[in-house]
Length: 111
Length: 114
Image 1 (tube, rainbow over the protein chains, first blue to last red):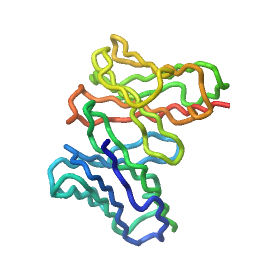
Image 2: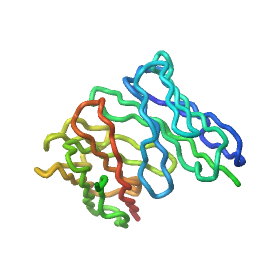
Image 3: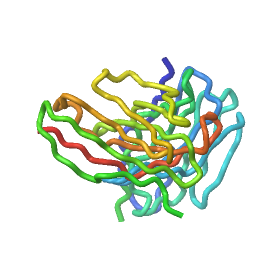
């Protein structure tokens, strides 16, 4: 069974601080996706990483895919209250090619 | 262009009842997947359909069923509702069955079973 472990589960920080969220697995994934979900809404895709060692930047967000394609990280620089939400990592896995999600990291950025 | 649309957005059902949730994929997308997200958890895969055929099924009981129509829209049906079925049900669409395709989610249907 492929599992994705996310840490930390909860994160509460002040505006302007930096943070990193981790997504780890013992399994290899062909790609990993990061989503942000706000209360009452569906997940919104932030980025897809495909190549081991790949780094992608989206404004203040930096995503990295591990060399072995088993782990990924999301780093946010100078967090803002608008970054508040649930961050989910998901890997395409299994024999059915479905997304396997981590439990998410709930981020709260206080002004 | 419209994204993935789901209906209804919220509904309340009683234990033992049946529910039907509906989903329209992004125009041009032929694959639809359903996920269940219980409060505080990540989404769990229920079904994937492509070209009206079931292509994948997660670890859910037979009370859960789905189908895809010729226009690629989809329905998720849940029979004999239990309190534990209370969750956000997410529909996602992608171009086709290939695992390399990006998956886009709708805003979900909130089901409360009382």
